[in-house]
Amino acid sequence: MSNLDPEVQTRIRVVQPLYQRLSLILLGVVALFFVMYVAKPIAAPLLFALLLAILLDPVVKFLTRLRLPRVIGITLAVLISMAALIGLGYFIGTQAMHFGETMPELKSKLLEMGEKAQGWVQDTAHVKASEVDDAVDKVKEESMQKGGALVGQTLATVGTLFGFLFLLPVFTFLIILYKELFLTFLSKLFPRRDHDALDDVLGQTKGVVQSYLIGLLFEAVIVASLSFLALFLIGVRYALLLAVLAAVLNLIPYIGMMVATFLPMLIALATKDASAALWVLGAYAAVQFIDNNFIVPMVVASRVQINALMSIIVVMIGGAMWGIPGMFLAIPMTAIIKVIFDGVPDLEPFGYLLGGGNGKKERDQGKKSDKPQPTH
Image (cartoon, rainbow, N blue to C red; front, side):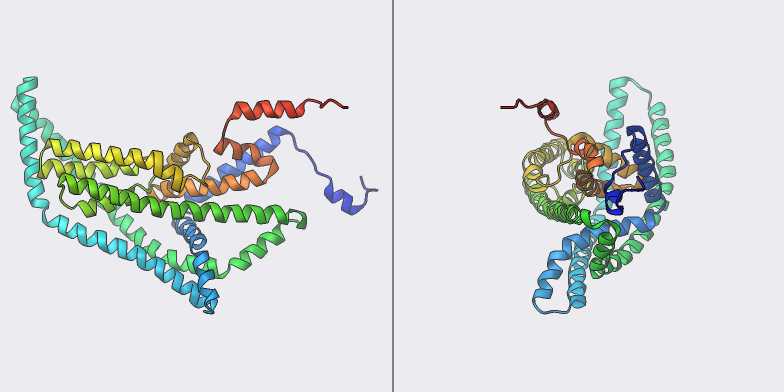
């Protein structure tokens, strides 16, 4: 080994046993999750800024082609994106204030419905009124206790939100500004023979993130339009606000739309009747069906090839680690990880596990390729 040429020695690859490779990969994953969990206050806005920077990169390039200085182009792109987010928040906030003005009316109608439901329980189940009152008082007491904890969590969330809104534009600006620095760092980190593979992985990562985020924007517009049309035809109050909330909550995979369905059903039940609430349920189920079977496959999932099982698992992991921000980040970050896995030979099986396809067909093709070919 020592008599070999140094260049030849560098090309010799030491093959580790499978159990060693799996152990190192498992330790790396556990360490990554631990660091991400501990570093949530910084890591969450940093990852959101990374996704936003990738999305804004074509905008910055367009502005620089207009002969604007790069710093000014980056500033304009970040300001436009922040203005869009602030505008959306302002619209939801003002509409929510108008909605709050009718809360006494909604409260009185909900209390009336509660009394009717209480009477129905007494007549149907032959339960004494005192027992029903005790159960209601117990629920109220537990709700007050949970409400106090919810207020504390809300205040903490508001504080985190203000910190997030401050860090997001700063991180986004700096990531775009120092993009070449990061690319040079990666090129120095890997040997020259791997630069082509590195460029391919970076290009695919950029394409996946951009197509996914642009697809989400189109999906949000379509879901908001369909939800508004349905609520308007049913006659539910605050149809525009509820439709926008549905589009925003729908960005949270699998869970957001279920949460978004409850509020318009409650408002329809309080302001109209039970049939209107059922119509809302049917309309949102139809919107979700259209979204899952037509919009997502054509607009969102065309570049993010992650199977349904892994999607649910990573969303649950993201929610357990970071709550709602983690649930939103789960899919795009998993898509990036899959691109990296697909570009590294030793990690390619894990990339296939995240995506998947016709496993039996590929196994059969692999067996055929392993068989010795007949010589002529």
